[in-house]
Amino acid sequence: MIYLKRPQEIKRMGEGGRILATVMEDVHREIRAGITPQQLDTLARRGIRARRALPAQLGYRSYPASICVSPNEVVVHGIPDDRRFVDGDVVSIDFAIIYDGYYVDMARTYPVGTVSKEAMHLIEETREAFAKGFAEAHAGNRIGDIAHAIETHLVAQKLFAVREFIGHGIGRSFHEEPDVPNVGEAGRGAPLRVGLTLAIEPMVTVHEPRVEIMEDGWTATTGDGNLAAHYENTVAITEDGPICLTAGAEH
Ligand code: MF3
Ligand code: CO
Image (tube, rainbow, N blue to C red):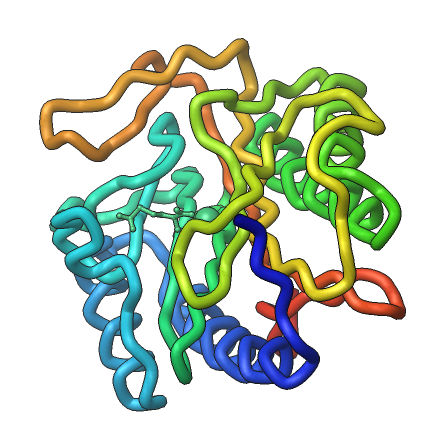
């Protein structure tokens, strides 16, 4: 079942999205050598609760924190711990909230201090892969057009889309239909309609990805120093094309 949202619902999701982007920016500002993932988690949880929103990830399938913090070869779902970041780390933050009954979901990858050229290329082109997918998110296209645009960009950049994890519809539930994969064929899959709200989220690695889940049941890692990045926004398809609901002042 695909739920199309009315303009009023999209407006509410946009309010949640602005709150989420604001707190993400607060987290970003604290990212430096010496800070720990647990400190960022506390900051994020307090920032969200102070704005009358709920951290959606806390308790979701027993997940123990409000944000995912995934350093270096961790692709997604890193559980915040007390290991301090060091200069050169590449850190992905994935964060979803519930505001006024609607979920919004967002991820960014940030450099800690000075990172390698390879790491910077990964971070920038993962964001660009999102942008290429976003540009295809208009009524009349299909899910496969988004997936194909993301994949094509990554192939051209000699980067790799992770296949084990994908984007999703989002709204009254965290994960709704349709699936939004990061590889696929143009012109295939569910049709995109006005009112559809999607989390578009390329997860990307420098070398061919082989993802393993660690013993904690969550942490998804390439396990071999193969750097990973993640860039995600909640997007609405409107009469006037796609709009990004998780945009702050900076995005
Ligand atoms: N925000 C992620 C998603 O898109 C993470 C969900 S797993 C969680 O599904 F446990 F961390 F919430
Ligand atoms: Co998501």
